[in-house]
Structures are given as structure tokens and as C-alpha cells.
Image (tube, rainbow, N blue to C red; front, top):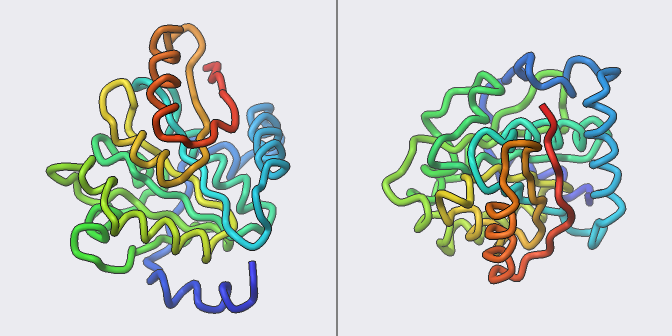
Length: 227
């Protein structure tokens, strides 16, 4: 990231109070846990697939259903990027059942939905122990999340994030229930497809991949959660 981009980062995105990673976010608390090594391996794969050094990479995490560990993986992947010194933003774009504010103990009164609706600068949270990481919560659940995530205003936000962060990780709503994640994938352009062993059916995963094809986003890989 250029020095200019780093210098203006806090002006572009007002920073809110410090938040604390929950104990479930093993990446922030126990680097020797075997799960952390798997997260770091995934981070390395994504670093090797960077498209350009002068623009931030944006990755949307998509899964077919609930209970697949999508929010947890999104948070830990963002932590992993930030731990290597890369300015990283974690965005909760699951406006159906948002969870990132719970994982970081943040208030959720002002977030992505309010920034899109009113055109305000997103209120970001700094993360304790991770000076290179910021979190944008989903905010109060809106009446029509799909409309918001398909809007020009959200598209503009994503382009701004490309200029002000090296990595942006976006959590989304389950694709098998809502089309929100497809709208995010179209704008982000890069996707990690997530399933859970002995939980996600082959049919559900294939259906999600079929629908993803219409977004023309690049599927970077498929992750199978075991827990």
C-alpha cells in the first residue's frame, strides 16, 4: 500500500472504539493451535493468488447454508492477514443474521447498512492487538438487504476499499436462503466457497456454484470445515 493511501485511511473511514476478539477466534489467542496452521496455509494460498500489488484484494466468503462456520472463518482469515502487517478490513455483509459484532464485542447500531442507506462514511472498529485490522459491522438489519448490496453506493464503497486496504474479507448471508452473497460476489470479483463436512450436501454446494457462475466472479478455492 502506498504511503499516501495509508495516511488518508483514517480520514476516509472514521474509526470507532477498540474491540476485542472473542475467545472463539483462535487465530488471535493461540497461534500454536492446529487450526491456526490451516488458516495460515489458506492465507498463503490467497497471497500467492494476488492479482495486483497496487490494489487491494477483496474476497467474499460464500456458503450454501447456516451452521457452516462462514463467519468464524471470515474473521480468522482477516486476523491472519492483519498479523502479517497487511492493512485488512473485515466486512459483515450478512444483513440477515449478522455475527461479526458478536465475535468482536462491538456495538451494531451503526454499520454497513446505515452507511449504504444514508451515504455516511462507514464507522470502523479497531481491533485490540491487531493494529492493522479494522472491522465494519453489518449495522441494524434493513428491510431489503439485497437491494442495498446491489446498489451503486455499495459498489463505490468496495472500490474505495480496494484503494485503502490490502485485503478485504467479506462475510455474507447463506446463498441457499438469500441471493445477497451473489450480489456481493459480483462486486468483489473473488470468492471462497465454504462447506461443512457431514453437514453441507453435495446438491447444495453444486447449486451454489451454478448460481455463482452467473456473477462471473473468480472462485479461488473451496474450503471444507471440519468441526
